Image (cartoon, rainbow, N blue to C red; front, side):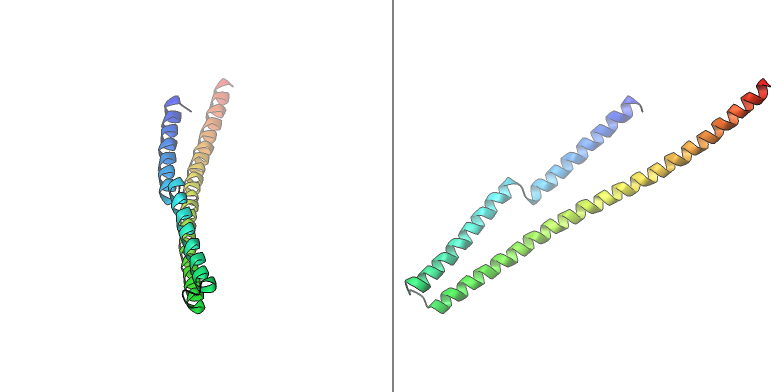
Length: 135
């Protein structure tokens, strides 16, 4: 393989790597992690305050406190399902991209094998012609 071909492939690989980094960063990096922690802390605080105000202080009815807690937990579960769907979609996208790349590599490999077999046949013919000429 030529040096230029290898350099082109390396540049192509680096560009793809940067694209993947950008996509992964936009889906969930350290910034998203902080948001999730804050969101979880706020949810937990509201649920605890609701139970504390209804169960211990009797500031609001106990049933309202429990209903509010169940509503918040339900919202949290729905939000978690939504986040998991985003992750699943991303994983599907990555796997689909890998499958497409593998298929293209397989096609290229078949073409290369065909070319090699043709070259072998031509080489064998040339060798036989040369051997016949020597005789």
